[in-house]
Image (cartoon, rainbow, N blue to C red):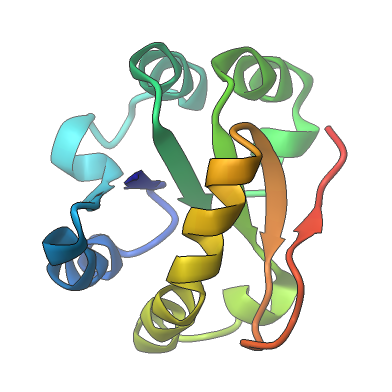
Length: 133
């Protein structure tokens, strides 16, 4: 599994996740590791979608609300985990811990459902709720 962290998540979150999940055969990168800061969402969504096997972590709900970005996301065939309001309130260290707590469940979920969008829950015992797009 390859994880892409949008620009609204500090790059060091992606780098910390990478350190933990790389030995498991996974990859995690920040947007700035691959694209320019001003790269449009529709461009990187399209490119990652063409490559396949990427999941996206974002705190940006516009991807799912803006009609142009929503169409680009849907066409990409990617799976996104959108930070819930509770997760958005966390500092970057706590966000990293939350992602790592859920990593195995995220991996299982993406293996079963290869596309779609889900709210990233705060609690380890919480279920991932699918977002209708």
